[in-house]
Length: 411
Image (cartoon, rainbow, N blue to C red; front, side):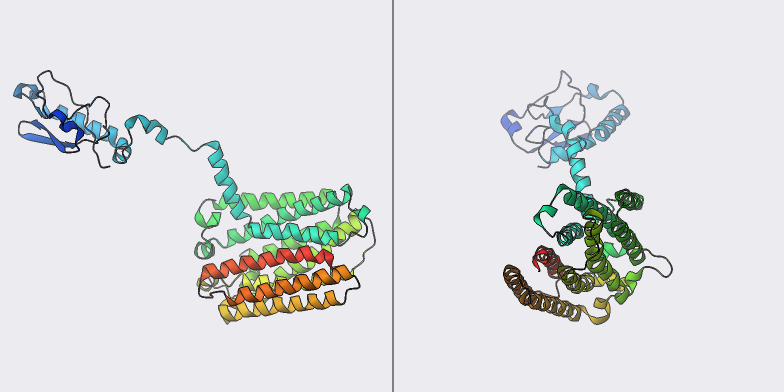
């Protein structure tokens, strides 16, 4: 409700009042002085507790003998002093509630905001993919039930934590290098939105890279350390804007970087970490491991291609020659679908050839369902809608997660 607040007026004994029951109305009242009028609209809620009715005041001339300048100065001061109360008065709130309106954010609110910003900064879909892939590949080294021991869980935990630290470094560095592009493609990210300063981003990625290498070193596992080191090199070369680097500008090289990390390093290095460091067994490349590496090669290429489809606008502006920019969104979309369907077909053949009945059944049925769901979902995607494409990209990541649940079942 619109309202204005009267400044500090004296109550002279000779004030003449009138108005009766009209104080309940919201009409405009006049406070009259000779040769001047001050018109005030009073809130029905009452701006001041001391005002219990509206006044129609006519002052005697001798009451205005004090200098008009003094009155104007006091009125100006009161307007300036009370300006901060106008907003709540306009909304119908009483002035007694004002101090609460200026309470600072609580510690809990600050914590929630900081957690949400870091959650978005860490790119949670990649975090989930990293955790599931390491756990799944680690299970491929299990040969008997007694292998599932505290030693196994300790080895997996070491690998997961070190890899997550490196994952945050890689995705954080990419955001630092793409702030302007992300303002177009992903304005919700903390650096693009301004929630994080560049200094904050640099501090985070530096800290997590150091923590990752430190953990990899003290664990004493060479497969783990080399997985972290190669991921660091490829992740840096992919994003950082230095001469001969920023490989993401070149579509084929960018895809090879993602394939090397997601398909080769994750499968082989983390399997060897459990096989040689935890179990102290000789290097053996089992059939499930070979299948996982081959299948995830298809999936990694698809992720590398598909991630650029919704980002085509910003990539065009800033000269990133992705396959989506060069070939068009629709063509790249269906290339990705074809590659995944080919991967599921290979998985079906591997399942059929399995000597284990339960493995054959689960592998064939599982991949048949995934292939069907993928095809039906792909046909319904509106390729003109960025939101629809982004949603489908996250659906592909969900298929990625499910595949890592099926890989340990392959025999």
